[in-house]
Length: 486
Image (cartoon, rainbow, N blue to C red; front, side, top):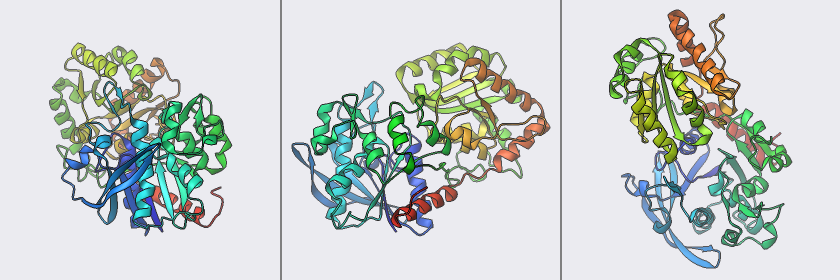
């Protein structure tokens, strides 16, 4: 089975969030299961500066972008035994950031990613590769299934190709002004309510939903949530209409990267058989953020997040005084919207020695926060899957989460009487709901015997990619045999 995974970001080449982790890890696991997997992404500055071994294989590949005829160069590299194709167009991709600066989105994102999507198809033609499955991810590649259905339904290379479209976060849809529709070269009738039109604009993600052979999203609960008005971001009706081809598959995590027993970023390694090293990791984290040494005996809450409204930053800011009154420490790593960066810097200056803030993306520090914290906070208003709660479980750092999406699917509420569970949920999205969950976590922390038991239970969870990859392989096979995914 020949599978192409097309994505705007893939670890280790380019990353802003979980999308990159998912695509890189899924590809490796599918390859282990016997699929012949290839990857395709833009050739960003991070690739050019990343010391990756890549070489040009196609020059001046013609790409039509509306009335313009542009060209791309195609480079090839490898991720283990997996071929990786890079689309090079420096005027589009040789930039500091992937999608936006701290001041806002790039003005030409429609051009950048419609161009990339068309290049995926063009390079397949130029290299004469017949894919069984083209697996597209989020709005940046959502136009691929549309173009294939409209222009290539009878093409020898593509007539048997099946497309899968994975929604990693419905909050980001690739909505652009009507004028951008001409960039797609699609017939005018597709700019309609039954096509890509969305309140007078073009919605790329809507196209992926309608024209792909199968839609997946990254947790079973999120697959249900996005069909409701509260979580559908205006596309709930479209998703309900296509519910027959919508499946939720919980993401996995890459334990070769996230495992305290062999993690090279942390102060001491540990495992569920011997967790003594975790206290050294906590001391190291307190030192790194210059927090009070007395917090060694109090709960230390970690948080690694994109600073955006979805992630519950407003709720955290609203509750911060009440949280710190509970005599806990808090360390936060993240970057994003300037208003949140400024607010967290202000909070950090108010609570010196109690709160540590790092406005950055730092992979090594992310590992140290997972290992050194006692609890991990994810107050997201919605969370399609989430990976950090799974990392946290592996590191014996009990998650405190809002009961939504993949957080609901992956965390078992702690029962204090039975001594069972893997984390703490709040069901009322409010300051009081959050603080009640933190209070429960603190009570359990102070019961040392119970806390040790909960840590072992958390570390015993298995969210490896092997399970998820088997589910993807199964739906690939169902599609190719023309069976219903249901």
